Image (cartoon, rainbow over all chains, first blue to last red; front, top):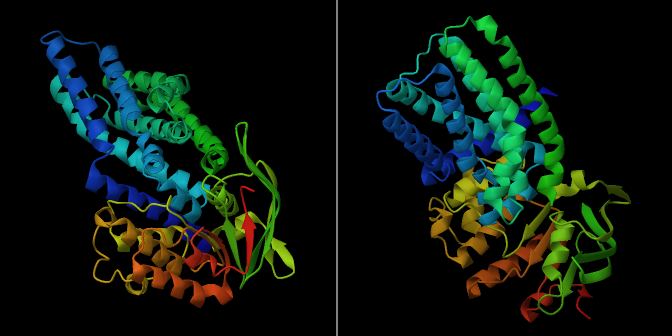
Length: 227
Length: 205
């Protein structure tokens, strides 16, 4: 089986590579993500001015920016395929599992790149103290994994609808509440100087959510993608 | 070599019935023409055969010799050329064909893919972004992709659309040359194309 597994992996990576290449040439999704994040962060930092924000508020703001940036950009992976009519060739070319995983990996990479940019901005503009850097980074990476897993399948569902923007937010919000709560709590612990072990509960929740969401999505996507 | 069998296929969109009770048995080496007025469901029937749409009723079977194979097995032996099919405009022709070959699990190096692009008359344009191509050039590129993918069942929806005289000749050569190994289903009302068909399904009667 290793040969078929490596062929399967190379097909997923081919889709990931195609997504990154087209994104680098068009900046279709990344500009939306980045603009939303930077504008929100800058507006908040100017309006707060000299007032010090609590750790809780900073953590909530960090995850709200990631959540709404995901709303603005991550659904595009399927919407642009439907709008450009490229979805037909993609459907004829690859099995649903490969398409979902390639798109999911791309969304995850996009969120990770966004985090690499906005974390230093948070530190500079809002004086975010990364007291436990390892816990903060782990929560961020696992949180973005969970966000990507959910928004990818929701994006696929929404791409078939007429009112895409509104439907994406309506479907995403209730589904992503556990991710937001765990992400905010984990970030509060990390920026408040807690030990790594104190964040196990939040990390477990993020990993469990991602595993469940990826498994369900792989089963559901076949039906969503084929109609 | 694969064949295609449609039994009692019908399709409705909401309360509007597009067609009903379509039956077809198509073997390798045969070409079936699908004809009918605009809106009679020619493209819809081909999309159903390609697995891009589900029929409202009926059964689709893929024939392999005396036996049958599942849609999953046959799926990547089917290729569909239609006006609705689009490439990624931001990628070059070579990148597009290379990507679709890779994701289909076909191992071809770039020189082989360039050869197919040259065969459809797009030589020296393989490194241009498809967004800069005319509709006729994109149509030719679809045939280049078909050459790369080497399907066993080929579904052609108005294959000569947007093509110049030279392009129409290319389509003719393509059909004549690949015909012995392919089961071809051809949706068109163009008399220059209907001549390839061995038998017809007439929709919208």
